[in-house]
Image 1 (cartoon, rainbow, N blue to C red):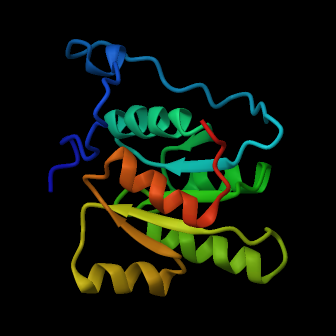
Image 2 (image 1 turned 135 degrees about the horizontal axis):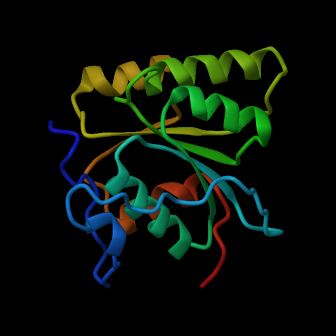
Image 3 (image 1 turned 90 degrees about the horizontal axis):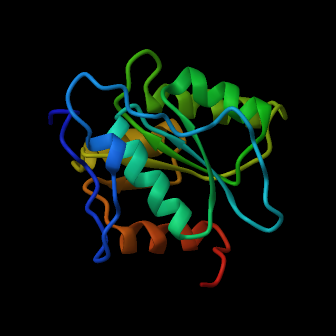
Length: 168
């Protein structure tokens, strides 16, 4: 599947993508991940995703759920983000340049086994839904395998299995 396709379905209410859908060649603003401001009681989720449109949509979904989210664009950034501040949950894309999601999950699990990171769930986010793909995610240490396109309700349902989401 072409990674430029939008791989998340939009919920029934509109989400304005504005800058993410701006004209070709324009640099769209990136989600601000430089400062980690933690709101008490809010679940902390690390989104690991390399596609900008998917980043914007997923971050908006998480925000609408009342979740504090940070972004990593590949496996290397994800490892650094986990070392800086361990999340409550990781949403991990599988296909990314550099270190892919499977290798990143293996390394996170190794760090957890060695006591370098606390335990937290890792949920695979991918367009690949074959049994072999699910098995590869589980073998790498993922707790669940979510397939794209992913809609708001499906994501919320899955996150509620692992996190206490704020009441709206």
